[in-house]
Amino acid sequence: MTQEMLFSKYAEQYPLTVPQEAVENELQLLILEEKQRIQYETLTGFAVHLSPQEELNKKMEALQAEALRRAKEMLVLREIMAAQTFPVTPEELEAEAAAIARRQNTTVAELKRFLGEDLAMLQSDLKKRKAAAWACEQMAAAG
Image (tube, rainbow, N blue to C red; front, side, top):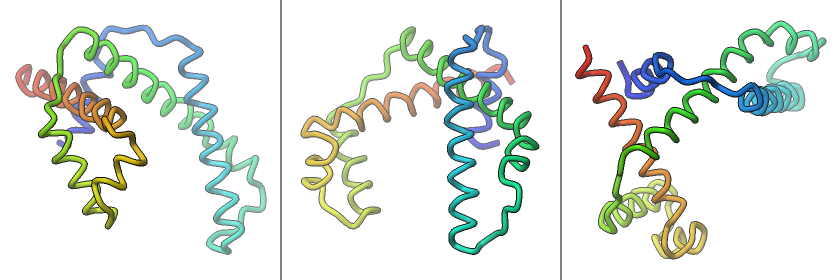
């Protein structure tokens, strides 16, 4: 089972009530993504969408379930990060920045200009990954 699947299972079992507003926000993002996908496929000739709104309506139940899952995972991750400490060392930041720079065929200096000299966005991302990994360890330990 992948870490993403383990974390989803952890979040699903986590005792947390998800505010309807959070679900609605995620749903609006998913609807927008779906509309953009349909428009892109139509423009590129990849697919013919004769009734885009009907297609969207047919997917609405699945989109609502996905919105609930995403909203809950985000809130669970926030709770974990509030309850636990996940320090990120300067070495970890630099190593991750170097890895991203290699993948993007750029330099760490360019990356820092984009993300900020302190790499705060990257630090936040690493903390989230550590929190998700911690949750996965809890799932694995629980069996």
